[in-house]
Length: 572
Image (cartoon, rainbow, N blue to C red):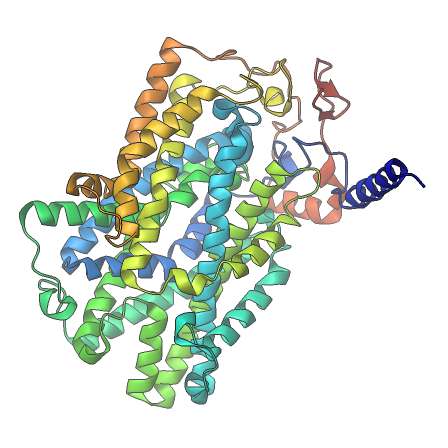
């Protein structure tokens, strides 16, 4: 057999192997069943569903930890709460605005970005968000492992004192890793649950965690007899010099950016959930009030409980991580009642961590992967890939110290703020909320979203210009001073997300007024994907979905046009 024949044989075997990996149903490099506009029977989320979903996912370890860690900067409790309130209002406005596209057109975040960035250029945006999904899945799983450790320790206190087999450089002990693996393993079968089935899990989790954190707040205030030593003076506890004048202002700006940074990724992917709204507008009323309430409540509880703990456990340092506080309570109180209380508190956080991690990281990351590799990945396979990569991210290294955690949170928002600015400005100002859905899936020059070889160069230029002002200072902060930059650059990096958003949105509107994109105002003349039929009662649609799973793959036959074949749009 000649070398050429052997090469061809090997190539055929590889192609056959990849063919076996293709997702069920028709698909091509730009579309599959999971990223088309959702059909009516899969849109089951009402205003109440959104309310419970946000209760379940907003009040969690990450929310309490992120807000409380701001105290390590030297801010007092009222100052930290002020940062959280300002940040929460900005987060809510951005979340609601970015979810409108999904609520109206029922498309995921990854597809919606094709309008501004191009059919291929959107991969850049998706890749940025996907990196965050991997990181956050690992971090949230680590936190879930820590509350699992609290639960095991409440039943078997010796678990806390288990012999450690890891070196100090690992930044974790053997019991930490065991608990992490347990939580990661329990999460795996739950990754197969589709978002339209989240109603009951969100309800149970939201009730449990809300009651638990309020009980924790009441207990902490009663035990301390007030708001704790950090309420007005943090100097003695944190060792940070008293902040005044411009230094205080810039530190608070950093605190606001840190608050936003924790949700920078969530702001991006809102369409992944708002697309499940039963009717357009349900997601707005289900978010606009509950989001700020949940974010501010969680932040307030995290900050105040941390301050109280600094008073009644002064030798333990700042207990800004709830799972560390629960461990110390079990050790200090040393009673069966305390262990029982900590078990149920940890269990409520356990449920919350499952909800926020699966919905906010695994599912959204799976949708991102499905949009990048639709021929081989769907929303059933994608979450498992996110779980494996998240495990490999060594999340225990990311949450080692408060300052490292703050740098990571506020840092990546440097890249995401401009992306959000482009998304919101493009949808509301440039396109006036009009999209031609069928063209979002056409991968050739007949699409109005094709631009230059599938990429809109204007988007890349605007993004780079918006990222640049914050980048040098962020690099300096992340290197802990090893890379020296002028103080002005460092201070500018404290404004990462808001500054990037403002620059990107302004430049985007200006450049598109000068050079308008093709097809402005165009929409499909017919319901190409059959997504705008009347929706019945959500309970009926859930039952219909259970009775006939094949309905998930139905798509109305689109109009005959260049670039469209049968039910799917292909590249030519």
